[in-house]
Amino acid sequence: MITLGVEEEYFLLDPDTGLPAPGRGGRASAAARYGLTGTLIDTEGVSRPAHDVVSDLVDHLTPAFDAAGDTRQVLALTHRLPAEGGPAQRQLRAFARDGVKGVIELITAQNVAIEH
Image (cartoon, rainbow, N blue to C red; front, top):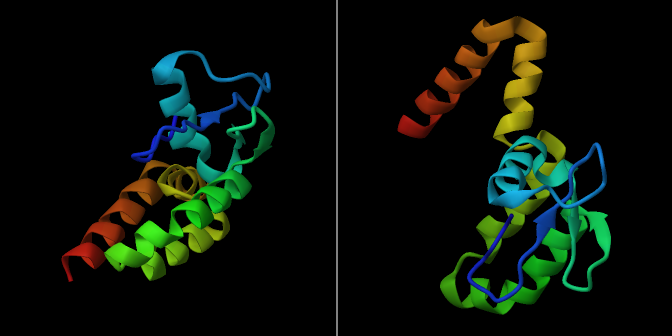
């Protein structure tokens, strides 16, 4: 489940059943695994691609992002994530490519980049 300091909540659907993932842990786990490649239920109760729902939310919150000076960073992140995937998708690709060694290398490279 994604909750962003507003009254609305956006629920991730289980990709196998198409139903809302059960319990908070289920939604959080599904969100971590599928990120913006999954499906969310929007504020109207309509199942839509997660990226579309997040884009609508960003549009709605843009005045607040502008006021905080965060618009550029938020837009860059929301445009990059669907193309690159979130951390779970990147780790799954690294594991498929090189097993545990690939995941360790990915995480190590990211941590080194953050430190510099």
